[in-house]
Length: 252
Image (cartoon, rainbow, N blue to C red):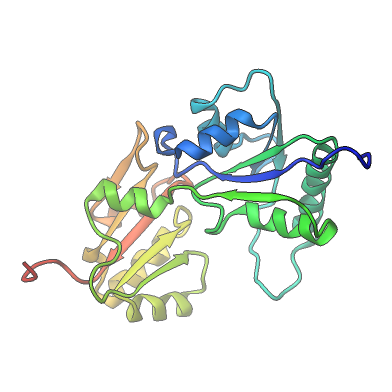
């Protein structure tokens, strides 16, 4: 980058839970204006879900689109990340910095909202460590839990409810304590863990308070009001469970 050229800006853009119509106006505008998109995917030969959602609203013609792999491995804050995870973060940071140093703005579309269990903030932290003065803007997006709540017509929280959001990868004892303690629980990333989740719900007498939404808002959406029926099914990654203990009966 020359001394007279201004560095480009990085945009972390939430593209919502899957339905392209749930992208915000600002997300669409930022993606339309950005000459470069760098998008995350889980597998080397896979596709980027965030790219598919964004492309359904914004044309790809005339821009550079680079799909980069991010390893989907468990991350524990305060502990050293898996070497493969760190390496891929650094490779993504390299790709972003090359474009920013050319003066190009870079958009990073990410599922849901960048602030909620998103790859976007790991990338941003990696970039800020290497380039503390980096210019970045975060564009929030509609979350999967908000879309699921709207789809099934149930509130996430009302009155004095205490709501918690949990990745289903938590160990059983921690998950048991959360389910037993809070009024409403949003379980994310449940697609490979349904058998043990349903077993916990049965143990705690909460199975009938749970609803599972798969691919919310898309053409092949499925809603399981009896979550036991989802055990043994090959669920999509876009699967979210809402567990709500309190009803509205007697309130009005």
